[in-house]
Length: 427
Ligand code: S3P
Image (cartoon, rainbow, N blue to C red; front, side, top):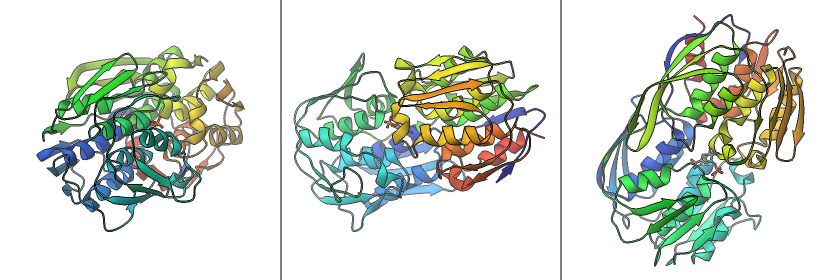
């Protein structure tokens, strides 16, 4: 994929459905009694991996390709059946970690794996708490990574204090807690995205939250329902950054989820001087949603750290690109989690930003970006990380000369129409 600079970006777009919520909608609809209809579902490769895993677990799921509508015939909490084959979670950390929580409690054994990136990512963070609950979950190679073998077992509730603010860890434990003897609580250092808690409640689970602790009590059945999924703020982030960077731009992004556990990109961009207006604010199925209007403005450096980080963790690659175009220094700290995402995003972002002429330093827990120097096009190795690819597509929009993305098709993971939507704003 070759990209070059543009004069301005103008128009209205609708980004695809939220990836985190899409995964959870399939999982909870599968465990609910009756037929659920999901609209606004993200038909990206990650969420399709979740669908295919649940089909292998005996759940009937109908998709109408291209419509974002999915119908799931739930079989109740105890309706999953043993898979005849390995469950392939593809590139999706959310699928493998959340599904492990569910499978730990089933009366059958299963094997889960995924692509090369998934097989490098840490699974001990879920294996440890699930084992404390009584689960039999093993890393086949003994290295704490997938492939995982899970032999379902009776579970007991625990109170787990997590070292990382991770919604995948929290959700794996809460989903296992649906099946445990007694209540299960998770306390995290900072609040991570709370889509599991919101959706579990919608489906009828007995779940409550106080501060950074979520508690689930077993016993309540889940009931089928319709779910409308808002647009993914993580996908909107590329257009927020692009609209801010490219002079003369004005972009309206319709129906984006602005859950406060996910809206760090808005706060970070505003702290850099971005001109953002929220319109038509409402709540759909427990998730706050708005239209986001972004106009270009001059940007300056900022410092991002602490409790803000979990609310923008997936947006840090594109925030680093904004920082490269902002005057002054941006410090990103407390974000060591970047090293264990789809790629080591500290290393990959730093190397690629440097290739475009940016003055950037890698830190153990983030990056220091000295922005404001003009960037030039370069060959970018995306390491098949979808968020890296889209971030550098944005970086290319104001760079001198062509930018070539290697492995550009990896955007299919979360945003198959990304290049088309970007192009529509250039006309
Ligand atoms: C996700 C949680 C986050 C995020 C990932 C999606 C989820 O990961 O980075 O893209 O859907 O729960 P962690 O739980 O590892 O922070």
